[in-house]
Image 1 (cartoon, rainbow, N blue to C red):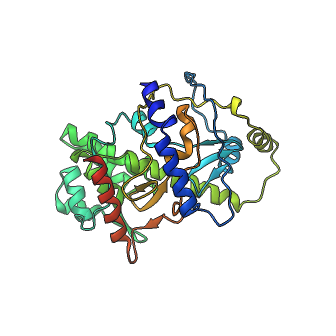
Image 2: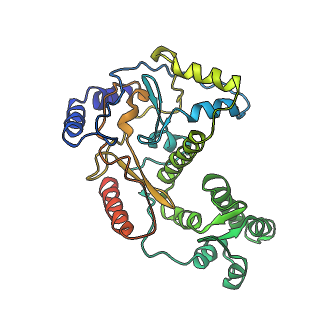
Image 3: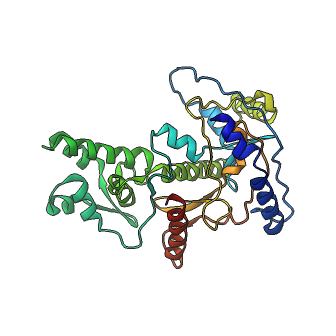
Length: 324
C-alpha cells in the first residue's frame, strides 16, 4: 500500500507539473512578492504514540499557536510544514472513505430548528418550542434541557442521540456557552443520511486555530521563560527532529483538489474555508512541493449576506462530482 501511494503522489510527475504550472500562471494566495518557504523533501519517522495522560501545557500551546499560518492553514516551523488532514481525521473518527459518503453542506432551504429537534429528540412540537432560546443572531437549546431529556427519555436509542447531539454542540462545534446551536443540529440531523462530518470537523479545527493565532498576535508577549524556551525550540527545528506520529494511517491516495478548485473547499456549519492538502505531503513521507494556492487565503466566507448561496452550490456540485 505504501509503495502504491508513493507511486501516485511522490513520483507523480503529472501532479507536480500541474501544481507548478498553476502556481506560475495564477500566482500565490498571499500578497505579491511572497515566496513560499516549502522545501523539496523531508524524511518522516512514523512511530507509535506513547500512552500517557492528556494534559494541556499553556506555555506550549501559546508558543505553538504563533507558528500557525492562517493563510495556508498549516503550521510552519522553518523548513517543516504540518497540518491536520482529511485522511487523518477520517481514520481517527473511524469514518468510511470520503468518496463513499456524501459530504455535509449547508442546504439553501433547510427545515426549521423546531422540526430538526423534533426529529432528533422525538419530542412534541410544544416541548421543543418551549425550550428554544435566542442567543444573539442564533437560535439554540440549553444543555440543561437536553440533560434532563437524556435522564428521562423513555427511548434508550434517543437517549444516545440526544447525548451525541450535546457532544457535537458543546465540544465539537461550541458557539454559545452551555447551549447547542441551530447550525449544529442541522449537521447532526443529516448524519443518519450517510453524510460524513469529517470535513466540517476539520474545517472547525482550522477556524479555532486561526482564532487562537489572531488572539495571540494582539496579545503582548508575557515575561514567561517557559514560553520563550518553547519558541526557541520551534525556531531551531530541523527536518531530522520531526516525527509525524500517525501509526493508524497508511493512505494509498490523498485528496488534493476538488472540482474546478485548485485546492479543497471545506464547508463548515457556519461558514466555509479553503484547504491545501499538497502543503503537507511530507506528513505521508512523500516529496514536498509548492502547491497551487491562488485564492485560498480569500476563500473563507460566512453563510449570510449576498452571494453565499451561489458559492455553496458551486462547492456542493464540486464535491458531488468527486464522490460519485
